[in-house]
Amino acid sequence: MRIGELAKLANCTTETIRFYEKEALLPPPERDGANYRSYTGSHVDRLRFIRNCRALDMTHDEVRALLAASDVPSGGCESVNALVDEHIAHVDERIEELAHLRKHLTELRQRCGGEAAVEACGIVQGLTSMDAISPRPRTTHLG
Image (cartoon, rainbow, N blue to C red; front, side, top):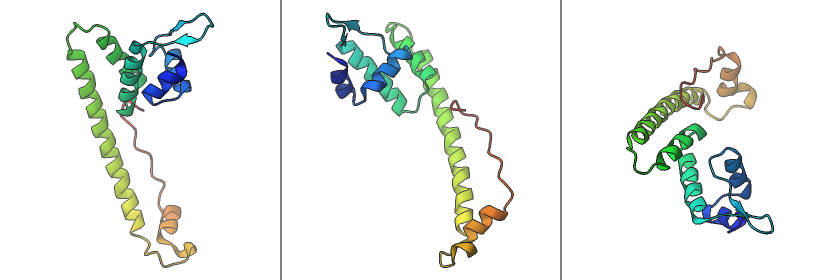
């Protein structure tokens, strides 16, 4: 199959496929007589795997690790479990960060009743007058 068909089956763009090939997440396809890429069912499966990992917010390195494990199907799945457990911990950290952000935004929102002119808006005044908030250091795998 050609790249457009693969893209349609995996619900992505041809640029995404080329990117994953460049990143060595997706193996390069064979070329046909006209030098067109010729993909197989294994490319479809691998691309779906990659896309599902990315939909779960996994990094390319995490995807590579899972692909490496899946390339040795008779191996143990301890490394897969460890990677997913670590990713769950990253998600928990991000949830905490977002809860902290929500708290700040909620406090800021309570400063304005919505009836004043913008120049008298409690939110605008608060953003102008409060000390600059230092961004919390991100400790998740996304940096």
